[in-house]
Length: 205
Length: 205
DNA sequence: ATAATTGTTGACTAATTAGTCAACTTAGAT
DNA sequence: ATCTAAGTTGACTAATTAGTCAACAATTAT
Image (cartoon, rainbow over all chains, first blue to last red; front, side, top):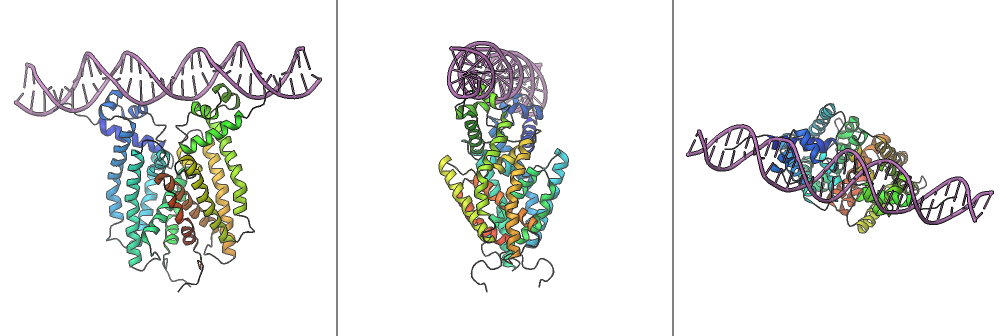
C-alpha cells in the first residue's frame, strides 16, 4: 500500500559513486540528492544523515561484490589459482571503473577508511573495518590451503594474510594516487614473492 | 623592514596537524586560522587559498623528515640494517604521534594523497606524488645495494621497491583505519619476506 | 621624527550547507 | 469511490563557508 519508489536505491547508488570518485568529507547531501534526482525532503524521509546513507551504501556494495569473491576464493579452486584470479579480477574491475569515471579509483574501503578513521562518529569506520576483515579472511584461507598443499612458506597464515592484505591495500591506493592502472601489473608477482611460492612455474637452480 | 611575524609558520603547522588528524576536504580555512591563532585577513595576506597553504605545508614537512631518512638510508649503513632502522623509526614515530593526538594517524601523504587524487586541481596530488617518489628511491637504492651484496633475491630493484613501498603504504593505512600500532610490528618480517632475504639471521634447515 | 614597508584586524558579502515542515501526490486495500 | 499509508515537493531557517577590504599597528631605514 502507498506510493512506491526507488529513490532510496538511487540515493544509495549516488552516494557510493560520489564518495568513491571524490571523498566522503567533500560529498554533500545536496550533491547526493542532485545525482540521485531526489529532493532533499525525500532524502530525509529515507535517511537521518549522510553517515546513515553511507553505511547502507557500503553494506550494499559489499553484498554485490561478495558472490564474485566467493567464486574466486572457492575452496574448489587450487590455492594459488585463487590469487591469480583475484589479481586478474581486480585489474579488470579497475580498468572498467577507470573507463567509466575517467580515472583510477582504487578501493573505496581503503581511501574512505583512511579518511573517516579519526572521526568522532565511529560507525562508518567500524563498518569499513568489518568488511575489510571479511576480505582479509579470503586471503587467510587461501594461504592456509596453499601451505597445507606445500606450495608456499607460510607457517602463520593469519600473519601472512595481513602482510599480503597490506600490500594489496597499498597497490590500490598507489594506483589511485598515481592514476595509473599499471601499478596493478606487479600484483601477482608481488603476491608470489610475499607468499614465498616455492617454484613459480618451472624448476629453479 | 616592516612588521615581523611568525603567523605564516603557525598557519603551516596548523594545516599539517588538521589535515593529518582529520582530512584535507573537511579542514576549513576558519579551523586553520583558529588553530594558528591568526585572523582570516592574515591568512589571505600570506596565502591565496587552502591548497597553496597545504602545498608549502607538505613541502615543509618533507624538508623536516628528509635529514632523518638520509641518515637511515645512508650508503654507509649495511643495506638490510637500513630497513630495520626504517621500520623501527617509523614505529617509534607513529607511537609518539599516537600519544600526542590520541590515535594512530599513519602517513599523511598516503591518506591525503588518496583523498585529493581525483580533484580537478592537480597541484597537491603532484606534490604528494613527488615526495612519495623521493621516499621510494630510498628503498630502491637500499635494495640495489642488498642485491649487490648478495643478501636478497631482487634482480629488478626498482620493481621490488614499488612492491615494498606499496606494502609500507598499506601498513600505514591499515594502522590508521584500525587505530592500532601493532600493525607495524609485522613490518620488518614482511620486508624480509618481500625482499627474499636469503638467511634471516641464523642458518636454516 | 617620519615615511615606507610589512603585517593585523574586524566587519562585511555572497554562496553553500544541513536540516525542517506543511501541503501535496500516488498507489493499493476495503 | 475513498480512505490510508508511502513518498514527494518547495520553501523555509540557521549555521558555516570562502573570500574582500579599508583602516589600523608595528618595525626599520633614512
